[in-house]
Image (cartoon, rainbow, N blue to C red):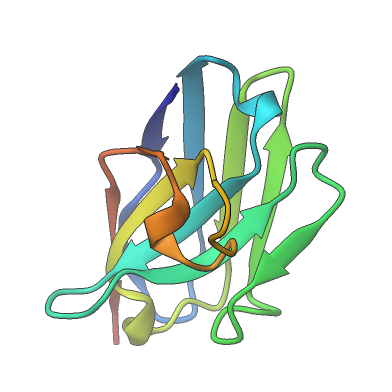
Length: 125
């Protein structure tokens, strides 16, 4: 398994930007697709974005498409989530994850083996 640590969360006004980082250790992240999920109080954990092992394929939730960008630097074992045009409804704890296994699809949180501890993102109106 790979160990994941998120950073970069914080408080930002609506319309602002944040960049989250997910640093991997142990078995390197380059062997995995890596995803971002988020969970707001009282809500289910929801898919945000995922990037393939090579970084050539990205997928996004409809709610963030065009505003968020996922990228990775395998030399640094780090995956990033650039979040622009933030909205109050983006407020949540953001988690990075890796180790997707069959038969789950990338947007199903149940399929992932490794999770970070999460980083809080709060967007004020």
